[in-house]
Picture 1: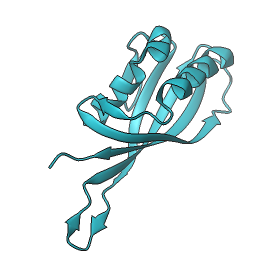
Picture 2: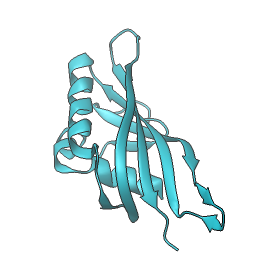
Picture 3: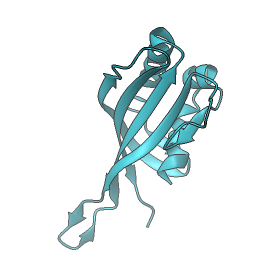
Amino acid sequence: MIGAAVVALLGQPGVSALLAGRVYPVRLPADPVLPAVAYQLITETRPRLARGRAGLVRSLLQLSVVGQDYDQAHAVVAAIRQAIDRARGPFGGLDVRDVLEQGTQDDPGDNAPQLVAMTWAVHWKESA
């Protein structure tokens, strides 16, 4: 379920123009067209109330943004921030309540291709 929401969030116009649908679960395919993004669920928590579940979910996700070089990767990172930070509403069949960036880190690799790892918390409401 969260995968469909991630794809929908990253399918917004500013990001879609750069990625053209190149959003993949867990890892990129062999020899991908760049830029591209792989998403991975790090953890998911469901708070409990004294009398049952709250119905809210917090999914912590990593977005691995890969570009041909530093500038291309960071252009995608900027577009993602612009498009999904504080997003709310229906995305991929989920009732998304909030999307918050938790942190971003450059991969200290050889710069070709360039990887930027972004961590996002997606808060959503489970259907009854």
